[in-house]
Amino acid sequence: MKRKSKFALPPKYILLIMTGVCLVAMMTFFTMGISGGPLQTVAGYVFIPMQRGINTVGRFVTEKADNLKSLSEVMAENEELKRQVDELTVELNTIHLEQYELENLRELLALDQKYPSYEKVAANVIGTNGNNWFNSFTINKGSNDGIDVDMNVIAGSGLVGIVTSVGPNYATVTAIINDNTQVGGTVSTTSDNLIVSGSLQTMNEDMVIRFSNLRDAEDEVAVGDPVVTSHISDRYQQGILIGYISSIRNDSNHLTKSGTITPAVDFEHIEEVLVILEKKQVVEE
Amino acid sequence: MRRKITIFIIVTICFLLQVTLFQTLSFASISPNLLIIVVSAFGFMRGKKEGLFVGFFCGLLLDIFGGGLPGFYAMIYMYIGYLNGFFRKLFYPEDLKLPLLLIAGSSLGCNFCIYVLLFLFRSRFQIQYYFMHIMLPELVYTMVVTILLYPLILKINERLELIEKRSAGKFV
Image (tube, rainbow over the protein chains, first blue to last red):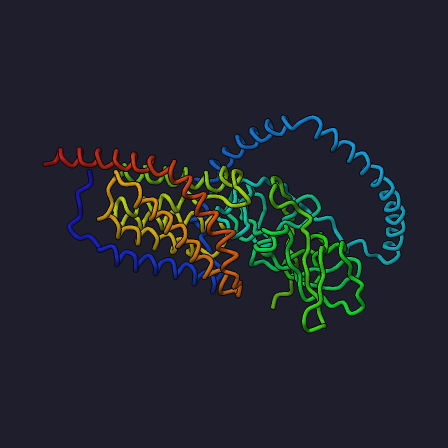
């Protein structure tokens, strides 16, 4: 048993000191962009293995539950999928032709290097941030696997988000539907730029996020048009699918338009993601 | 030392459950806040100082794995733990009303701080919407979990206090 020290600091002074510590932590983050460091490393090694364990158990249980999905449901889905396969085959043939043409044209223009296939690493989602206000999650790969802050994260074909902090064996990904996230996007049919901003409210209500600042004087952009990341974005690689436009309306200034986008990724059920191991090149000042 | 280790284990378990299991068990994408139960409980059971440290530690965990502003949640949770410490004089283990009331207040207070600091300042003014769709559901869900979790924390604390009293008595 430890001997009680004679001098005990009253709680209110401790509170004051700790408040100072917190404020300093926030200030260093704002001014120098430093966060955690060794603390993250230690926390990573203590908590990440446990999170992984829980997730392994969880996935096992979910799989078993999924197997019990009723047969009729699966059959109905099968019908639907068969129909879809037919549709997609037709589409694929057309695309093949177009691809052939595109390759020829690219060769002519020597544009081989324009859309390199990025090097990616697969990771599992092992935990969320634990509150209902923001949408960020932890993945089980970190700087040991080459992941760094500002790398883009995709799932399937769509953009999920961006890595915002990284430890040796984990990384935190902030989703594009997060209320304070903004992404520069382009409507791929007309190459008009717009700004995609996450929103808790619209995501809760209709599973959509907002876009704004779309200049489209000729009314060419229509509902259903795909939106991809823009070439002018300084953190996101060009040409990753964000989602599809679900509604458009004119702004009160009659110059720009805004509306909503349905994200291409199902954010409720993300399990596996791919991290693009390349950061957007930006010109250093 | 025994107390520190026990609290560390409680916090760890609650944190892990909160970020994994309870996210899957969420209703309408709302999940309960287990850590606020722990912080608040240790605040009014053990006083300002312990509430303060437990709060700081819980908040720090959320900060590290949340990827946001470091120190932000640590500060909010620390103040919640500290403020709960004021009610230690009113606290009796047999009474369930005060703990429930305090935990409910803590949950609301925490969410309100987050709303004001991170949403209102970015001109998201629809407080009614956020109250009805985020704060209130989380409060209800947290209270349900409290009814299960709080007696457990209370038992553990009573056990710890008993052991501490016994080992302190040996020296007299």
